[in-house]
Amino acid sequence: MTTLQSVPALGTHPASGSLPSRAETREQLSRATYDLLVIGGGILGISTAWHAAQSGLRVALVDAGDFAGATSSASSKLLHGGLRYLQTGAVKLVAENHFERRAVSREVAPHLANPLTFYLPVYKGGPHGAAKLGAGVFAYSALSAFGDGVGHVISPAKAQRDVPELRTDGLKAVAVYRDDQMNDARMALMTVRAAVDAGAVVLNHAAVTGLRFTRGRVTGAELKDSTDGTEFGVDARLVLNATGPWVDHLRKMEDPNAAPSIRLSKGAHLVLKRTRPWRAALATPIDKYRITFALPWEDMLLLGTTDEEYEGDPADVSVTEADTAQILDEAAFSIKDQQLSRDLITYSFAGLRVLPGGPGDTSKAKRETVVTEGRGGMLSVAGGKWTTFRHIGRTVMNKLAALPGHPLAEDMEPMNRLPRKLPLPGIANPNAVAHRLLIDGPAPGPRMAPDTARHLATHYGSLAFDIARLANENPELAERVHPDAPEIWAQVAYARDHEWAETADDVLRRRTTLTIRGLATDDVREGVEKLLADRD
Image (cartoon, rainbow, N blue to C red; front, side, top):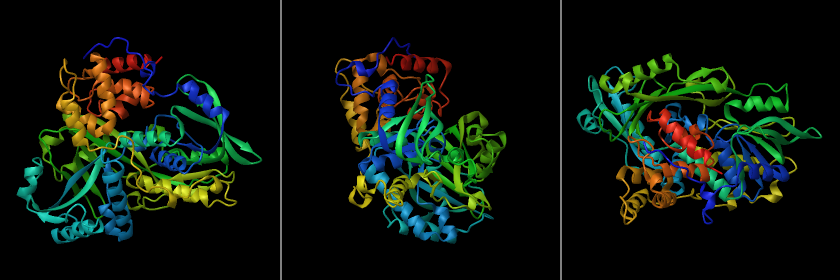
């Protein structure tokens, strides 16, 4: 690993356009009255802030941790129509999900989404027969207007050519369909950038310590900057509680007698090194309702997920030994043993699904978004799924426009007058970006490695050229952070100055893939912390 010398913040370069300091952002938040204060920097809060800023409102967004620091970076990494929803007859929901999936993957963020072929194996004695699954994937593709081809059935031999670790004992047939995949943390971060580009003011690592009230109405929040302990406040005409698993905690700040509104379901995942290349994903039925996934992702294999009720502190959610055993046991239905060795596990993570309150099995509960208004006028939004993040943002904005008395309506542009498919920053053809990165390297120096070029293109789009420019200007930043990963040190400096990275985990877990690859070593962490400390 390269030992970095002191690399100053990009803000020392007059044309860098780096972010304001945290002190400057706190001052900006403190001295204005915002139309909307969004508390919670998961994808629901981020999307709402993006849409609100687009509509012309003065918007602030804060989060106690990092953007997408909890559940929003602990998903199955899919943009999908929801094949299992056909089982419950939710045809309209699947069609709507497909519309959003296609919009994101083709027009909003083609640089951050990748098409992925799914194989759905049909085993002797399994919960579904080949004819039923064949009809299911055909209907699924029809609801996507056959935009990704026609769902069909193939032979086990053909499937094994694309998934060499596919278990073929008792395998009768394989149904085929297509969805899309993403790096959820990167998608969330680009949406934060879009919100800021539209005028929002954002600050991570700023925890709410209390709410502000004016004549019984919630009109802001008291905050504490966890990086240095500074306390400050934000005034707002309306406050939106988008804190995900913590939504009821904030509701009790508004009204100590507020009844619970949600329940939580834990979803755990494992990340493993791949023993051989995979050209398709597996979606294996476990029972009538549940599917377990095996997804080629970031050169690794992602397994999961679980679905069980969770009643503990959301901050304590983790992957247990029981979770690991369950995921590996379920994966073994369709994957050979050599790919499921515990020695191959590089990382595990768990997130919490926010479901409407009520009885019943969490695996059968609807993934719907609920917007409620508290006695102090604070709106709370909870639930939903990653695929429909733009739709959720629009839904919340329509709710804001329709509030009694229409307090914000006269100041905001109606959603139906705004572009429905506004792209995220960096939109570009990632293949073209990778090609340019490979051929446009510095004349006297070594060219960029192909895996690094591809990684930058598919995680930053055209913004990758800014990172390449940093690497060209400072050869130390062109070095790999770890020899077994595609990331280079320029990404760390870029995360520091343009992507709100404050801690080593912000960089290693969410702005790069080093943690999920099992490469966040002590030396790597020390180097990242050193570069972050060179901010000023």
